[in-house]
Length: 318
Image 1 (cartoon, one colour):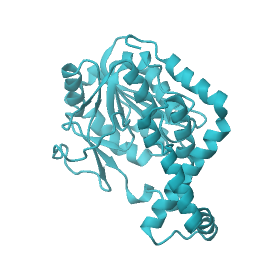
Image 2: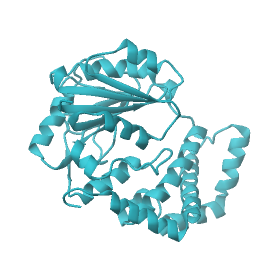
Image 3: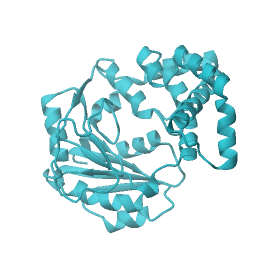
Image 4: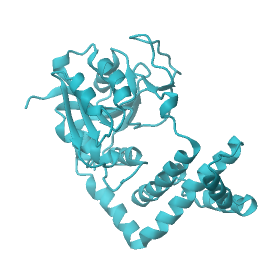
């Protein structure tokens, strides 16, 4: 099996219509098509995703399907196992790119030999009409070092770090946890503002308030697992596991009864009119879910998770 310069890694689920916009832009790259591939793993989609993959079949497209729904980390690991590229470029199924996107990621890795490269994420509700939309130093700027909708890393480095952790069984934190282990290998961060994605979220797929609450329950639980594996200040801050967050949340709940408000909103199906109250309820949901998961894990399991995370890293620099 011949090695390629790069592999796009794309997990997808029930996004056939958006994937139809994403794939042509991934094929339309300044890098020759025989030097890279597009690897898509369909996480048990129930829409026309398989038909879209057949419609856009190409010599450099490889795809597989999970027969049962799996977590994002496991789905990405499946794609990584299939990949033949020296560089893995992570994008989501709703990422729309310029023709020089892959070229820019490859350039960054020539300039930064042991790096994780990230690029801008430009949220949009309409796909850009241009083949090469304008870029800018501050356009889509962010500080996430390994946002898997626009990030790249050498395949060998990711393998040395142990791949994505499949303990993250639902939404939340598997990419940030992966970054912690890449850092253990001594990799540095690089940011290329010339390699943006347009993160296409049409109004039809935007989550409502109650879907966001369900998502935050998952995110909070996975945050507790993430912090159990990497007990440092930055992770505690990210996941709201700092004691200060917990104390403030308990105090606010005691004063305005966030628990009761959330239950009443769920029962009525009517979301609060106040954006500030919605923010408090969303954060409360995440913190409570994290607190519950942390207690359920227990001290022994938390210690085991921390040891397992360190043991995954096997490569040079570990």
